Length: 276
Length: 287
Image (cartoon, rainbow over all chains, first blue to last red):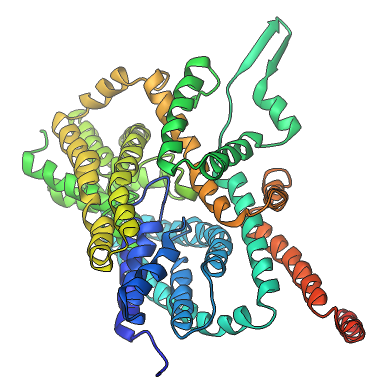
């Protein structure tokens, strides 16, 4: 049987679908998952011959995905390469692919947020603001042209690099030491997810007690002295517990969180403390 | 002078394209059309006053020059800042007869933009929540296991159906608020106060929801109770030791490397002598 290869057309289609659709169907629960599914679809469709295999392959990418989507283009390219290898009979399982995705998305998000969004955009905008003095159209036009060209070619490069890498990375992933490597990759993924839970989630309580004029208790301070961001940890664990041990669907868990939020607000446990 | 229906509709369309989960995509939508400076040009063209548009856009842009939204935590909504804030600021500047180039005009634009931006986070949560319905359709297709259906449904869910969310939470609010003018902002502030139960609950839910996403990830990687220790290690790095994600990942890779070597040695156990020799070799390499 001839070696299967993702055609340039299908790769370009996956690339364009991702760079356009990475966030179009965003929700707090699945974030970029559907953009990912939509991008992988033409690739899976081309690689596998029967429908059953196609469904099975695409189902791998049902797992939650979120990163800085522009730099994250690399991950999509990488999985295109991995999927190609898998279609050629390499024994890559879903856990390995998802371990790689989970391990990459956190650090890439950190890189993308700090380099692209936190540094590159402000620099471009700074130049553009200077050019737009007195209402000149030069400033906005400069930003539109430079930003979009840089991003298109930058993302194309990231995608192609990822694709190349996917083909070669697979050798290491399926060799005799694959179990050890897989175990280690999942370990990175788990730790990074832990760091993500501490970084991206921000759950705090506003509850405080006033015992007398000069003695009181601010619950958040007490919690922080026990274990910082303990509430993040608790809520992640709670959601995990409800989904795995109580077999609740994510939607039911979300509904439950709405109730928790409402009750918490009424009791004074939660208070975002925002004002106009 | 107010904003005409046609102008309001155009502003509404751009709001759909430019918001954070926007129909223009991330690069072209959010990061191009959603930047207040670019939006200033667009709004200026729509309202027929390009110069004022850009001046107002630039003033608001300064406030949001480094608007990073890590993990979808939104502190200000770009569609509202840009396509509601800028038109309202232009109206207000005209109404008060200010010179667009003056500091007072810039201050007015910035504060109006910020107020509208905070208000707009409601639109963000609305859009993201309504998208759950379309995603539900997608999951159902995936569960069904029929490839022809999946092939049709997934692109539909990702590219087409979210337009409905945007008509509800980008288009209509933008059109209505722009037509009503700046009095609308005060009105909404009165009816939906930030210290009211509705808004408090909304923002609390917004802070709790990312926990579901992370928990779905945990479902994937946590196989045995002890894996929570691994998770807790990463958590501690970020929460207690102040490591950012890149630093945390680097430390994680380091420990994974140790784990990999230990596992490798375990594999080589039948040939103890050989493993011992390999271990010596590695030690020398390290030096």
